[in-house]
Amino acid sequence: MDTNEFAVLKLFVVGILVNAWMMRGLSAADSFNIEPTPPRPRKPCNESRLKWEVEVCGEEFKRDMGHIDPHYWCNLTHFISEYHLFTVCTETKSQMVSCYWPNPLVESYIIRIHKHFFSNCTMDQVVWVDPPDDTLTLLILIPVFLTLAMIALVVWCSKRSDNLA
Image (cartoon, rainbow, N blue to C red):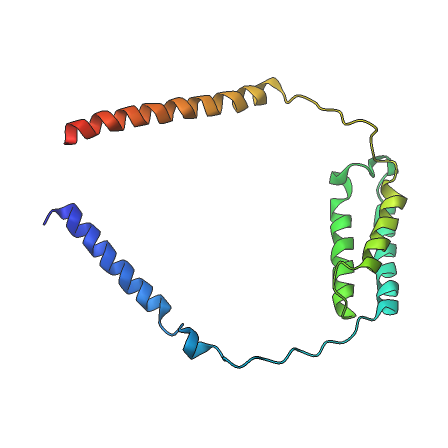
């Protein structure tokens, strides 16, 4: 038996043994209860408390945005952490009062926040800007060279297979 064939055979046997070892005890009949489980009783959504909790999140967001110059309110990089904290707060408060997230109440509040802080951020016309010349050159040359390299590899492998046969 050739050494490469023997190595492949050993690898195949080891793979089967590892697979058997990992799958041991994971039989569906052994580990799962076949009887249907009753649905978990869920408390109803307390919308009045959710409205108050979301207001608390909004006040924290407004306070945090007060520390940022209004000139930078349209640049997400200046307030991304504050907005993330606001989103996490609304999600946490929704789950705390047994409401799903997002829900219409939270969405309407988020829209009000957007109207308050970000209403002047829309542009009438999108301005498309070309990337810098260095970036553009790289974006063009990389696929061209990869294509040439793949063609060279195919030609080289086809010539080599003729020598091995």
